[in-house]
Length: 201
Image 1 (tube, rainbow, N blue to C red):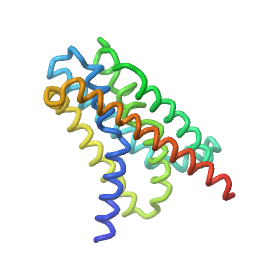
Image 2 (cartoon, helix red, strand yellow):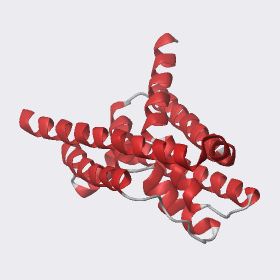
Image 3 (cartoon, rainbow, N blue to C red):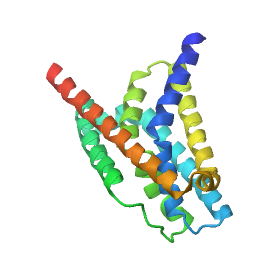
Image 4 (cartoon, helix red, strand yellow):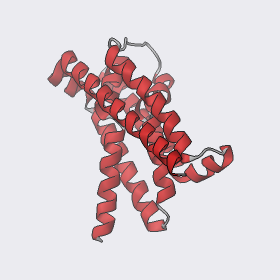
């Protein structure tokens, strides 16, 4: 029981971090500027649903995707890490995202769900974790923890207006920049892990 609880908490915390909630929130608020509260909440639910579907598919289909395209895990780590690093640099240096007058469905899946929330680092972690958890119990707990992390990010988006009023644009901007630094560190770690894996084989 203790082992299962530890596995659940470990996966939940990992993905709660990998979803980069503050970056996702800052992008969500920027891209929904001018939306009324009802429209913003509807979009937040749509984004959460899209994230859940994509994550579950990647979690259970990781091995099949690798086999189909002949991609090794280390190759994926290096490629995804490089893309993530470029995204992190852009996030730190670029000015805030300007608002877009789009319909809810136009931005719920792309770019909010993918690649803002489910980015390269999250995708890589999902593929790795899906391959590592072999038993039915472990996979079930992993999927449950993953969905719980999605609920947490969805709750954050639903509370976006309140958080924006509390922190202000400057506070959101600072959190976005800090998230960029975290993403850069994640990218460096992914690349180094991939290179180390190649050198060991």
